[in-house]
Length: 94
Image 1 (cartoon, rainbow, N blue to C red):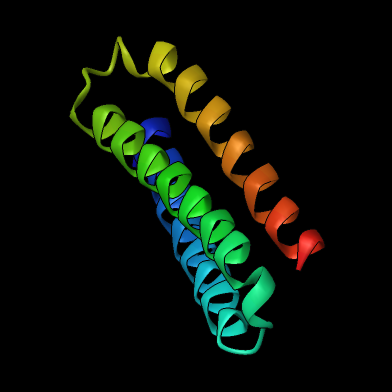
Image 2: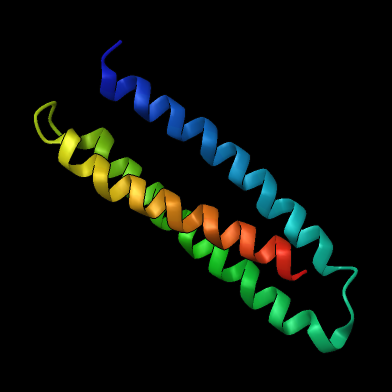
């Protein structure tokens, strides 16, 4: 297995973890008061969008050549970092 394949597998497992986190955040939405529910749902939607960005960048990485994947990796890691921050922010706010 190449380094790129190993990296993609790692990302896929992390995406599964993030999806579980998003599911937990969505479950909490059922239990928040109406006055904060809209803000909470906005935060969850922001997390979903960031997750989708990571998915898109991961697909770009999968479809890239062996030579180009290292360059694309930088964008994936940036999106990964932003998603992690968004999830942590959502958990800390609610």
